[in-house]
Image 1 (cartoon, rainbow, N blue to C red):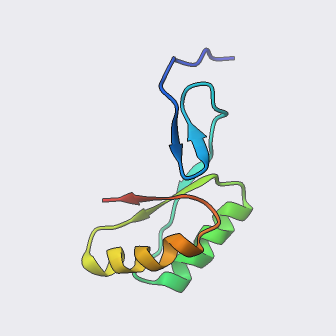
Image 2: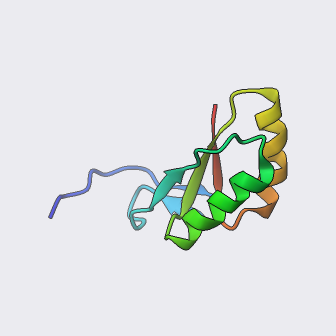
Length: 82
């Protein structure tokens, strides 16, 4: 058993991270974020497998536009990797 380092708790959507919050499962999509349907399918797969938070690449205008359509439809909080 490892002792956890003291950190400050923050909220990512309704998921608490850090502090005394439970350890969260995070993963990242491998689709092009501009592919809204493909990215959402992968997000739902990850959520079904137990992911609490999902990260998506947001490295161009098309990805940002896709992300704006993905976030409201996601079952878990999304973090943009910029």
